Amino acid sequence: MRTITAACSTLAAAAVIAAFTTLASSQAPVATVLFDGKNIEEWNQIGDANWKIEDGAVIASKGNGFLVSKKPYGDFQLRVEFWADDDVNSGVFIRAEDPQKITGTNAYEVNIFDKRPDPSYATGAIVNVAKVDPMPKAGGKWNTYEITAQGSHLVAVLNGVKTADGNDSAHKTGYIALQHGLGADQTDRGVIKFRKVEIKPL
Image (tube, rainbow, N blue to C red; front, side, top):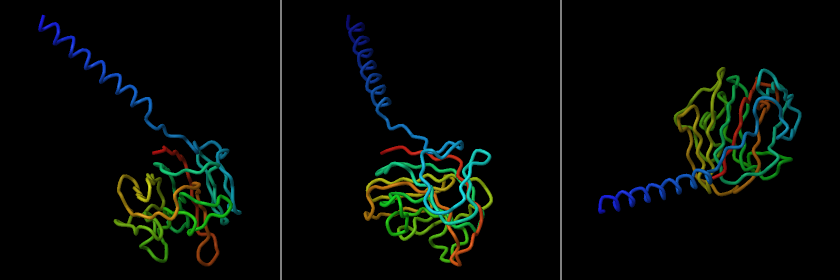
């Protein structure tokens, strides 16, 4: 009888654990695909960059502009696949407060700019928040950014290596923006491609 009772207790405990595991799994945040390589219906275009869909990616090579998400986000994990020329001026802007005017002062910029004049905030950095360390080179290949914004804590991971980790509370929520920018001399500097973008709330 003791053996049967113990077995029943073990089975009951296992059933409770399984139920809680199933419940937790069903409540876990699910990533939303913002760009799948096919269209940019989930984005608004700001500026005059020449965005186009080509070979499963959205590409820009000229102009100064952004693709801006249609919804704002607060705390999240953002995954972005990108290809960049080593001299292109680009970036992933997060928590942009004004979706019609994206700037470095009303958003956080996770940079894509290998040849930035001040290399401390080049590719891998969160501009004016966390300098890049170690300093990667992203030019001429596909890369993956994993960007986490949770409260004031901001982290950038490039190709599996944490490159920037900082704290700032200036912007608590806002839009995601993908950039093709001009150089300091206002000339076009190269190509940026984004292949997949997905976000998961925290």
